[in-house]
Length: 259
Image (cartoon, rainbow, N blue to C red):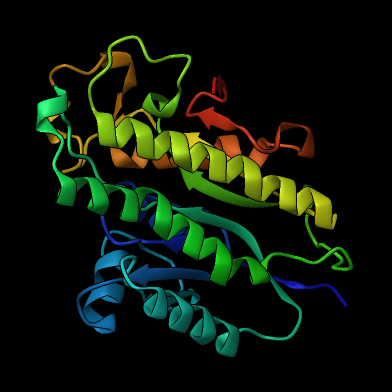
């Protein structure tokens, strides 16, 4: 008997994450689990489906989850486990949490903002691995699709140490570099366990969201994208990745981002 595949996007209600959720609903027939921190499930469900037509709304499953609370992350994972059918596994998971305080000088570094940045950009991703990685297929799982399961963290090119030529953005650069180390470390764990799954990072370019709004005018026009375009590009890149491309960071064009 083949296993039942599902998709997870967390968080899933704004900008790129919302576009990813809608793209999966529109282009696949798989159940899509989406997390939200605020708003009622009914309101969030309605908003996600508001731009879609011909999509079975029952495929969209909502999970309340606060990235700043391990107990909330743990409870969301338990709720997911209780709702899944037998032999279900995570086919593709996108972990999208991120925030930016763009310090220009060392004097701009703020203790509370620094902690908040690392909480969202690094620690929440680690806690999601802790509580949700059990949904990846085991070594004994018989996959009903070509290629490995994909565990995907949204990183950024500015997390690259070797590509850092401008400086600035201390907390964002450092947190994304730390996230890249988490990606590589977790992928090594998956490899050690011989699971049919890989962990990668992705760089979406500068996406036109509230996170990046201040920098739209200074961004290269070749790397400034609407959320819908970025979501489609990332999903296409991730869908083509093989086990030989595991444990690295890939951009929206399918090119590797250096460490």
